[in-house]
Length: 265
Ligand SMILES: Nc1ncnc2c1ncn2[C@@H]1O[C@H](COP(=O)(O)OP(=O)(O)OP(=O)(O)O)[C@@H](O)[C@H]1O
Image (tube, rainbow, N blue to C red; front, side, top):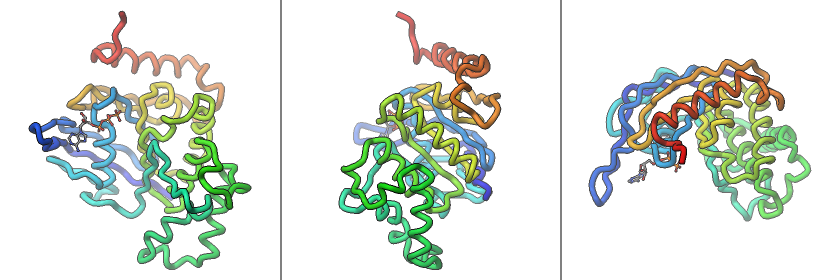
């Protein structure tokens, strides 16, 4: 299955706050190829989440246009799935029933055509893939942070996405779990080949995962660098030792230094 192509044609955003207009994003011109993995890195408040919400159709643009798979897009589209930093699982539902939630929420769409049994089998397959099959009947409070986020990812994947958007999905996890989640995510990406838009504060995470890293300036956010990552796939635990990896990380640090985001004291 192929992922969606994303195009931003001078898409911009100014919020109308009580104290006056807040320009969050300057006009952004960006094209993300179908089935590519693109990360957005930038300082806090530069408009990364706003950008993602606009692409997801959750936040209107103040100007310009967003196209998904060649079509002008202003509303949430079928095939878009989102994973947030907070896992937003429903505490009163089992792991399996959390993964199955989209089937219930979208009962008037194409999900209808699948039998309940098939849905469950599909959910179990996904849980198996992320090592959680044995936890299907547990409740969220019985899981670690990393396991909870894996459940959220399964809940996104069960929607059969062509565009997976992730807003700091591993931000709340400890360093080791976070690293493991990266390997798991790449395995999933290699299998499903959807388009991934990944928001992170971590330069290393962005370089490790992505085909391209888009670097943003402080607010009002603009794209200051768009870097193709020249590292072979599949990426492995040893990829970080590759001098090309270090070079990309340094290149992005240098952009942040030039932008005044990172300062030596
Ligand atoms: N509803 C809103 N009304 C007014 N201003 C807003 C609103 N939402 C966001 N902003 C402002 O827009 C800017 C961009 O916010 P956004 O959350 O997109 O940044 P971010 O890069 O995702 O930040 P972080 O990395 O800290 O999550 C910020 O200055 C924020 O205060």
